[in-house]
Amino acid sequence: MRIFNLGIIGYGGFGKFLHNAWRSLDNVRVVAIADKNATALQAMEGEKTFADWRDLLLEKEIDAIAIVTEPSTHEEIAIACLEAGKHVLIEKPLAISLSDAEKIMQIRDRTGAVAAIDFIMRFNPLLQAIQGFTQQGIFGKLRRVDVENYAQDEQLPPEHWFWHPERSGGILIEHAVHFIDLVHFFAPAKILKVNGLKHNRNPRQEDQIMANVLYEGGLMATHYHSFARPGFFETTQIKLAYDLADIELQGWIPLAGTLKALVNPQTKKALMDNPFFELTDSTPIENASDESRPKGWGISDNADTSSRRSLRSGGALYEVNEIVTGKFQLKRSKQEVYADSVRSSLLDVLKKIENPEHQLAATLETGLESLKIAVGATESARSTNQGIERIGII
Ligand SMILES: NC(=O)c1ccc[n+]([C@@H]2O[C@H](COP(=O)([O-])OP(=O)(O)OC[C@H]3O[C@@H](n4cnc5c(N)ncnc54)[C@H](O)[C@@H]3O)[C@@H](O)[C@H]2O)c1
Image (cartoon, rainbow, N blue to C red; front, top):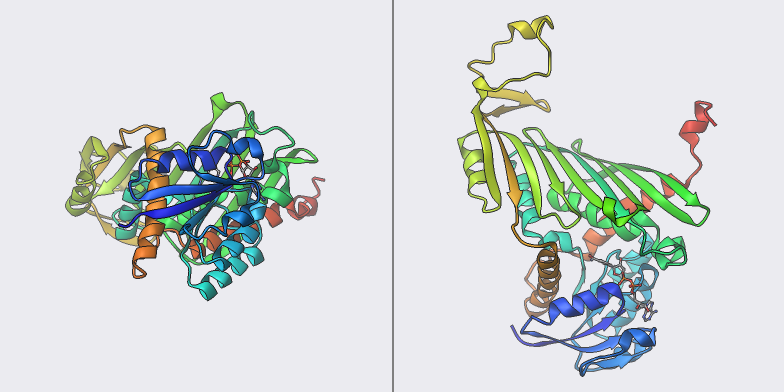
């Protein structure tokens, strides 16, 4: 791969993290950085700096630009970069409205430049493994995704752009799009219905919000996000329920998870071949206890499971002979996996610049798809609580 010259627009928390992670890439040189905040640009080591991002676009040597400013600015900056003949890696969310996102895509199509969104979860090896299992149908159909995400708000004072809907779009648009996209990465399907609920701690701070999504084929996803508690309670759980398995992933950069699954020799082999999986227990299905109905519950007393080799789940018939439990573990730190993911995300854009046949992992279309749900659920959450009014509670 040839050497690419890169510009970064927006050099706050995440812009700096990207720059530091990209330093180890041999074929990438960050040559220019723009930020409206002069103090963000202190102590540079040879990179050109600009207070106005428009001046950075005039740098002929720049091949591609990372846009790492607050969400409401993505549309204007991305369009100007594309018009200036630069390729772009746009931070999530793609934009804060669907019309803004569509405008960026139109300009991408007209200019023919490469444009991607920085959905880093698509580059996490554990999530890639689970995507592979899901796509191959190892665990049958994915029926339910439940994201429970408690983030700290100690570093987000009330005046931060994060709390301004007109600057961030709100929690679902600014933040949840990562997790919404993860569902689309695992099991893309047509969106049928979206709704939401939210809570404001005060008129300016919407600090808890959730989205429910129904997809064609029956997959239902729920995304709960709160930015309300001290960092000690910062946790993320992603639960995936398949016809034949339950998976629970931990962390917003998932490094580990647990599995309980019904398998047959082929699907067990696929699982055992995965380098991140460790088997804890395996029981032939005829010896496994099913305590869903207690003894004395009529018909269940008569159920004979001793020769059970096939069973129904979600209305489909599956051949299985064992029930297994186990753990997924990346055995690497969050810092390493996060930094590696942002390196892979950038390299994916550079591959596409070199080879137009290369399929981008995180296209702007994926950015738009997750934004549709985030926008729809946010609008639903912010509308008057008709359901509650109707049953006379308020
Ligand atoms: N992919 C990820 O994992 C991930 C993680 C964190 C943040 N992000 C995204 O990165 C973006 C930035 O987030 P952050 O946490 O770094 O925010 P931040 O506030 O720390 O940094 C944003 C920077 O952009 C600068 N800026 C804003 N508007 C500008 C303009 N018009 N011209 C020039 N500079 C401008 C600000 O001065 C600031 O330094 C957001 O879209 C956020 O959602 C992505």
